[in-house]
Image (cartoon, rainbow, N blue to C red; front, side, top):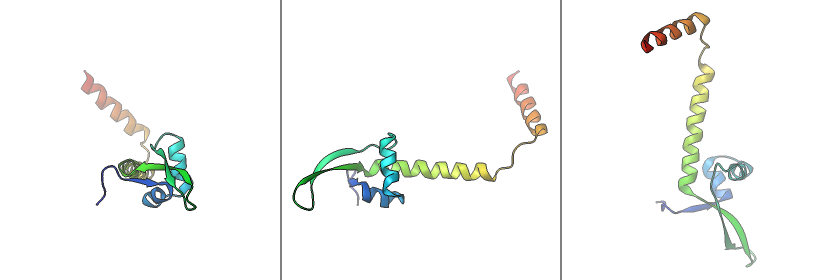
Length: 98
């Protein structure tokens, strides 16, 4: 069970999102994903700075991406409206305003 304050490093976050590591860095750089730099012990005993990302933030960005993918798929499958359909919709909306 995950704790609410659990944090993952970049490689673990990339695996969780199913995206490459550079995509996670891009999300951080563009401000779409919050991260915190912390000092952790490195492999050779020296400390290194790592980006740590909250699991909650990862889940939120994943839900947003799923929603955007769903909307894009619907828009790609929808046929464009004809001019007569657009005219009928405009007339119906004008009648409601009055």
